[in-house]
Image (tube, rainbow, N blue to C red; front, side, top):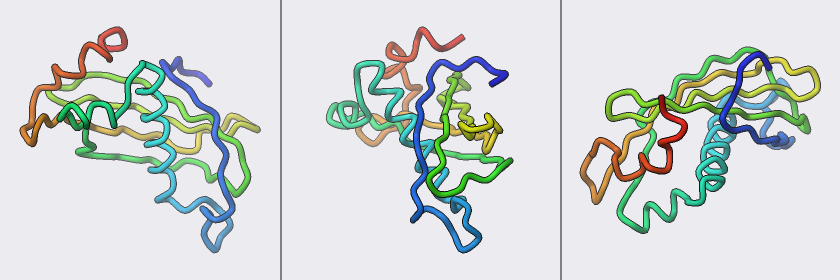
Length: 135
């Protein structure tokens, strides 16, 4: 990996995630990205569920994925992320690498907003959790 990341997790594809060509179906990469964000938040001592129970929902507002190399069933991969603030949005820059050869499989930007009791906010409610990772 040429980049530095604030969080990484190793995961493995499952055969049922593959399409007729034998590669992981494109939609499953969004699941991998989501699992990575959830695990990152949990590593910081909280969870999306905890925030939700407090009336705070961090919700995806936009996802842009560039597909580079396909994963196949049973392959291990490393899912990585960085985080930045862009106005009211938190932007997760996420990459997935095939573990066996460290080829970049996808790169993604996931934009999230913070909604408190149904009202869009600037995200101050969760900023303390992310503060040390924001520039």
